[in-house]
Image (tube, rainbow, N blue to C red; front, side):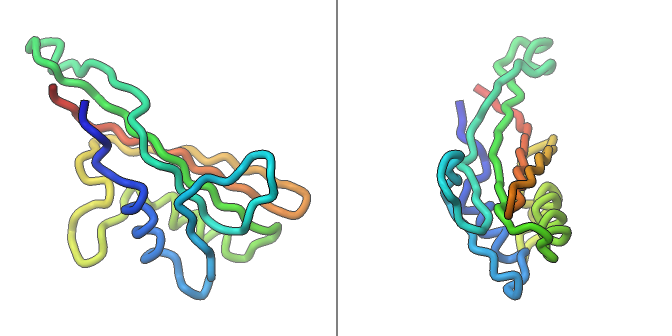
Length: 141
């Protein structure tokens, strides 16, 4: 079984170059607590392979070919009525089509299917947005 082709550090770097400095949003390579007070900012989880399904090509040819699904989450903890939320939402959602700066290589190169879902939670004084990205790649054994 091979590892995901994207790393947490690469995702954080893509966010650093995509977010305007004027927004002053801290980026964290850790995940926020569900039970404690958390800081304003963007949190990125590690990338894990969450599923492996036999690929039809492998079934018909007798080979060991799988669709491997890698998953990670990004959480944005913000204050209510954040004037930057629409822009931040667009930047994070567009990671699926992001190209590494200075190249023509997509950030998620090697993945043939990329999708994400977003969950929004409005608290008393804050807003929490969680994006779950699912990336599908071919895996050969």
